[in-house]
Length: 337
Image 1: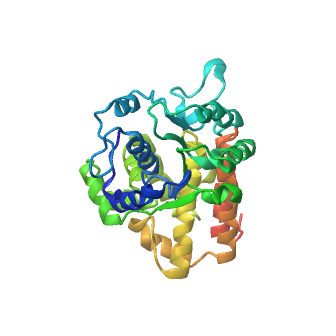
Image 2 (image 1 turned 120 degrees about the vertical axis):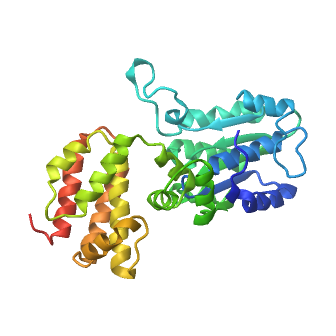
Image 3 (image 1 turned 90 degrees about the vertical axis):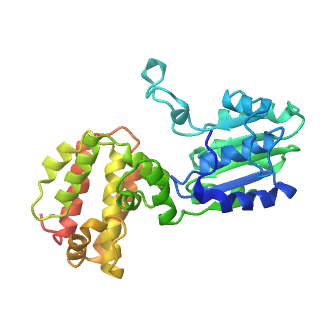
């Protein structure tokens, strides 16, 4: 199990201050890729540990810690979409694992709630990411939160708290996990053997774990990203259909994320003269930003948001990329075909 990341010490101290009067539900919120899930697991492990050291983290030596290592702790439940739990991309029969937390998963907690704690202490339920609960699952959880069982803690980990019902938010104590300072993230990435830390952090929205994952991407994907940047940096010349064809092997959500970051830099350069994500292409971006209308840029960003929400559904990636890239080129050329 992961111990605390270097940027989580202060957050752990804030959590430690809550333990004297422990709430029945905690909402751990923050950007994706900063270690919130690992932090929540540390909360669960330390709360159930039989002999936690002075710092409050789990000892790693007691029977409770052993159960966690074996993923068999009787007083702990992890609720997450099947897609995160599945070892294979598709389950038996070719059916893709669910990307949402279902109502059945939440209802299954009823038996767990009614049981006495195996160790006579707390029971812990970790829901991750909480915003993937469908409407029925959220309603079922609300009923449980309205009538909490004694010495039972719910930890809801979320990247998008705005997507949770206000009724659930109001019944949780919020614990915000901030983005770590760039220098702290860069130092950690360097310790992991990652080169070019500043560029990767910028590309990852300054989330260090996401930056580490980007560093592990295959060279083919890295080459596709470099080619993508080269092409959209010259909107009057690039071949939309050829680029869409070349991007077919890349996950649609990933390409949309690239476009969103590029447009964010265009908007930031136009309004504030700053480039956040593609620092090495700052001159190109500032030049392009002077040619795009703010209203057109906002409209295109809205189109990308819609595409991002629909990216997980079955579709033809090439046609999607063609549509988005044509819209981008039209925006940059002032509506010209």
